[in-house]
Every structure is written in C-alpha cells, then in structure tokens.
Amino acid sequence: MSKGDGVITAASARRKTARAYAVIKEGSGRLFINGVPVEVYAPNEFVRMKILEPLWLAHEYAEKYDFYVRVKGGGFMAQADAIRMAVGRALVEATGSEHLKELYKEYDRTILKGDPRQKEPKKYGGRGARARFQKSYR
Image (cartoon, rainbow, N blue to C red; front, side, top):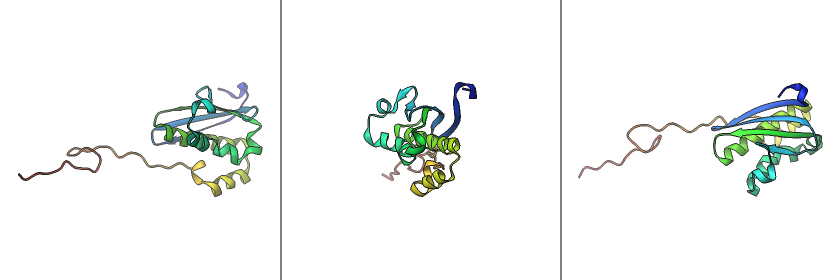
C-alpha cells in the first residue's frame, strides 16, 4: 500500500513467532484483521478485549481512523499481543501525540514495547529445552 491509497501510517510488531502489520486509513474507528472485522476474528471475549485495549484507551483519537491488520504465525494469544502492539504503535505514529504515548506507557508498556522472550530450542538427551530423560540404574 502506498500513501496514495489513503494510508496515513503503518507499523509492525512481533510476539514470539506471531507477526502483525497494521495500516491506518481515514475512517470511522473499525478494526479489520486479515480482512475480517475483529468481532468475527476473535470470538473469545478475553482475546478481543486484549486486542481492542489500545483503541479503548485512545477512543478520541481512534474514532477518526480505520485499522487494517495482517497477522500470521504463533498462537492466538501471541497474535493478539502482536496486533495490540502494532495498532498502538501505528496510532501513536499517526497522531504524533506525546499524551497518548505517555497514556499507553502508564497503562501497560507492552502496548508500545514488545516482550523479547522466545521459546528455547529443544536439546538432545531429553524431551525439551531443559528436561532430561529419566536415568535408571536397574
């Protein structure tokens, strides 16, 4: 998408192996994830609330824009965190509001800054990264 398509700004975010890319356009406060409204994409109430947090906190800013998010990889919770972060970053960039940035930081820092933790790779001699197979002497 180019600036000629009505795009105001874009931002990306990652959580574990989930990747999200958010684009903001002029609109009426709708959020679409992979081309589907958020109400259909996230039928689980908790996941939907987590995704919509940045929009609820900044409702006076967010009601002027439509958000289009592409997300892939990871599980549903990691995707929700990646979407939340991409939308929050894009909204801060679109508005240029220092007040909004401080609001997000005060509420929950992970709306703007990600959690860098990743799953540790499995090692030989066991069934996981740290767990070892049991040893028997008889």
